[in-house]
Image (tube, rainbow, N blue to C red):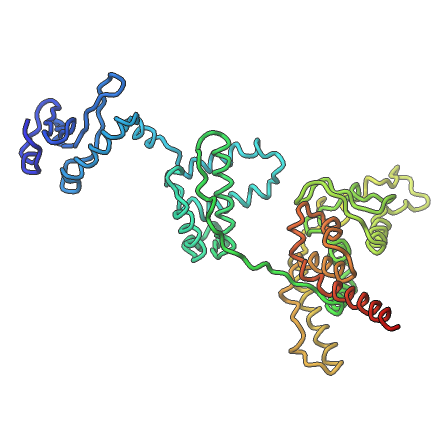
Length: 443
């Protein structure tokens, strides 16, 4: 048997049947020549008494004989250590891709996570389809490293997955990146890996240990003057169009309860406990929860209940129709059309902010203040009403624990975002205590 060289390999001609020429330098290494003329480096070895063949690669200019010998020596070392390189190659061929792992997670995940909300699954699907699949979908899930995940996060933050495409008549899909989206994508991918590990498909989660981007939370706390301006703007909208009463009461309930927008919009009369004075929500972002109601919120609900009462039939009416509670919408804030709940809040909220901002600046001008020093209300989100509820509670001396209970936080760290707001009440407490101690020291 000759020693394999590039020149010798080039002289090998195809025959009617497949044949191979062995190398004298590395035992088991050879070149296989098929009738089609395709030449490949192969390694022949024994495993468990059986003869196995491992194809190393095409014997062309892109894969040299020296590389084939190094590859063959490494494979023979694996065989001596009890590893079958052919079995590893077959396993890699059928290994789970990131796309397949995501499909498995989205198909079977709801069965393993019955308490996860459909909206959360929708968010996951968006992150998978818009960011994770385009960049990592074809990669083998087991081959990804922490460095791969870190690079993925950086690419998403830099807008590599951003796009703006037409999806239909007058419809477009606008996908943006950014640090917050990139960090959420890493968290979502990590959840898919954890599920694959839980179902014995993988053993390692490469997202663990990857430092995610720190995102700046958008927190806007309203002052007494700003709340008053919003209230005045709501009253103006009601006077201009009585149909805006539902929108106005929606905002008022958000201010008075500290609830999330979805919790108030989907509020049903069945959830109102009049005797105890609370809302018993069967479902929220953190599961079922009880929301204590202030007297002002109860008064608002009673007014809406009375306004929604079915009209009494007129005297002499003989059509057989009698008024019943069936005519009442099950929702506290019913839709202006149809049977559902009110849905037009975001659009009207923008108009309310514009009106409230004008009111605030007008009052500042009347008080001889520079309107430019007035904080704009145009960037206030509906969720900031919930933040403001917490800030007013803490300013009134409430503890973070109690605020978390009212807002329905399951974890204390969720309420800790309001920790800086407790500085003023603590300072007031320190001043009162120091004043008493100072008085005691005067003898």
